[in-house]
Image (cartoon, rainbow, N blue to C red; front, side, top):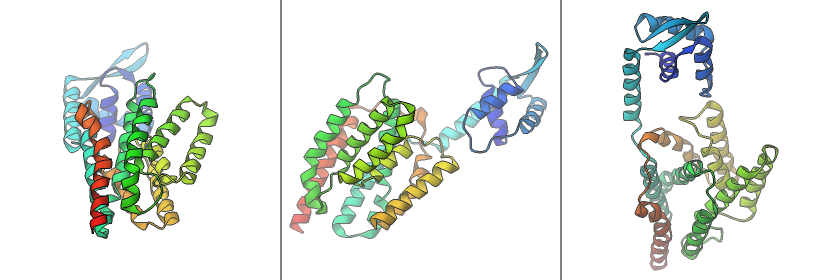
Length: 300
């Protein structure tokens, strides 16, 4: 079954629609390459011949309805998609944590392959933060999250400085700044959002948070990632990583470009509310693993 056939059947899954209604429904998916009205009409005729849909006339207009056969076909398509996309958000967070640990051990051992693998960690965490932000309740306050990030960021700061021998702020403090920026963007009027984004990028760079302006740009891109990403999104993502790698002189960061390929395995239907242990694990793990590696560095 072609891509257009799948889109047509999906648009009819809940309601009977006219050709115009189907075209508008498909267009609302914000796809990069939309099928033409003529192309959709041709597929409707074929799907009707195959028994996946039927049509009737209502007020002089042809209206299409999905059949039981069509509904079964849609279920098969969804099942195959869900099988290919097998990871939930908590599993991706665990992968990000493991990659971070590999990266930090690689720094301690001066092992470049481990550092290259670790480049995928920060973008994955940025994606998790973006997902949590999008799922927040409309009236929920960001202050508890900001406070928690800052508290554990402060606890982790000393071992972070000892391990990496630099004075910038660790990623928990970077993410606290990101949440503040997200909050201000959310509250701002449309004509001020871009200004706040720019000020956030500048503030991150001037205040010396880990990853600098990239710490803000990465979550901003991740919060706008839909599915496998549009062409414009991928261009923005590649350009952002290229600029950061070039300006920072840390060319390993270019490997972060492939991070969205991992996110392609995310299945939103498998997401669940994290347990209390899962929710708190990373906050405790981050300063503890830094302290352990910092102690090893002192010994070695």
